[in-house]
Image (cartoon, rainbow, N blue to C red; front, side):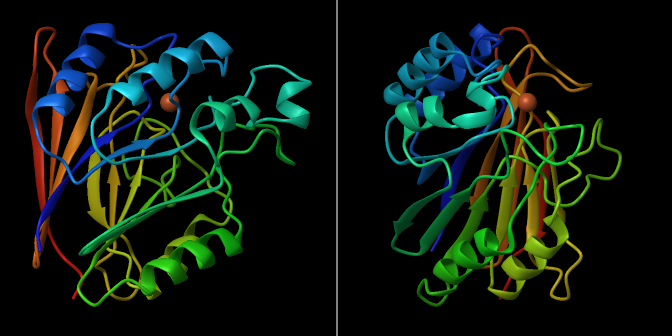
Length: 260
Ligand SMILES: [Fe+2]
């Protein structure tokens, strides 16, 4: 089995790169993808008008789409952030905590690594509870032999070497171990606004971390962009696309061995 995924992240509606977003929509409507994965920060300040724009964008996408919230997708101020941080996200996109996509030879789970508040000063950082990783991992493990298994969440679960910022995810390396032991092929994330792909440390060295750049104007040393991810029986190929100002072009490609 082989397939391809359109991996978008950090569109930050309210602060989106309008030309780049329009070009991505055009691409999505004219090429075939097995899944369109959106790994959080779909809004800038979690405002209703931003969610309305984000929902219109997602409705215009063809084919299966799987989303997860990011730290920007909660109301910027209390009391919404305190008492119902994901109410607007839920109204626009459904369950913020765990969503699923299953097709022949391919299974994906999206879980929420963002929190409205945390017991630490920086609430933008990530957090994963052991049960989140266990439930998603167990469901993926139950997929048929040879299926391509992926997880989506917003924050990179382990730090990105040389990245422009940290995810500092509580429970991140624990979650990676749980997912790797259950045969997860790849973990797709956003948050740092730069593209990357590398094998994660756990014993099998075959669970791949994949990050997508931003489609907003909040660039961090890399142009606005997204990833095209292709897989077959032996390989995962990640093609990072960068916005030139008029069109996208491939700015970097990684080809990594697939878990067997
Ligand atoms: Fe972001």
